[in-house]
Length: 388
Image (cartoon, rainbow, N blue to C red; front, side):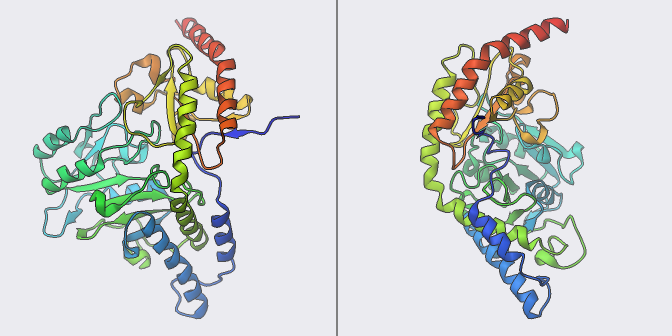
């Protein structure tokens, strides 16, 4: 009899929570358009606004600050636009992004790429606020985009310190919190963030819905989509009522289950201890504060894409770095930015745990790694020799 599969790719996406499924099924019976003034329309509008309040509460925001989008990528693209300014401040003219950002941020949104600057990170993938201060002092007002938690390594950025540097320079801060939501506590006011991107499917909600949270005293951003006046005229188009309902329910459930992350952190320790029994394994960002559920590891000679297939054949789902780019055979730009050489940039395997992960799942992974490690690294070394 085939063994039950083990899912350890929670940073790519999460199973739909029962609460989200129930909310979405109920929303399917709402026939009205949320922009209509009749009873059916008002019923749909209530669903959207209740979800908006739940999503806002999850990040310490007000409901009026939440703009629903089709996901994290659209939220990032909506945020990254020239001309944003604080009330009474000068509009931003350039973009500064950290070297480990998600590809949707690295693409620079609506900025001319010539006006986009890269902010280096240290060996753990963490930004130095002093280095950012120097960049901010050397030019016109900037929009700074730094993720709260890295999607590959799980490394946490010192966002509060970064925010202070950005405010002192009269600039604007965008934070991609897609990977952090539901894993650590987030408060947009405490962090002093101006723009915050989040996504439903990373917390047990449906795919295809996200949000940009816009701080107070901000002029902009200009809409990406124009047409009707939905989302306070910030994002045109009839709202995805069913998806938004699921997002709201998932946000409530995710925040309620934050204490469970302590158990997940313990499972990560067990997994990392097992990995370190194999000589040559590097756990990336191991000396930085990290998400409690995330491990990115590699070894010289290991090819991540081959390892992912090997684990899959053993009934275990993991990924090679970011799932958004895992179909491309290329080095991890995150590992490269951290200063590692080519022997490790192609080796990164991401293991991410979630609320159903058990110690038995972790042991299954370690058994598979023990079985696969020698042959995978040897096979990869031989492949390299054949290519020369």
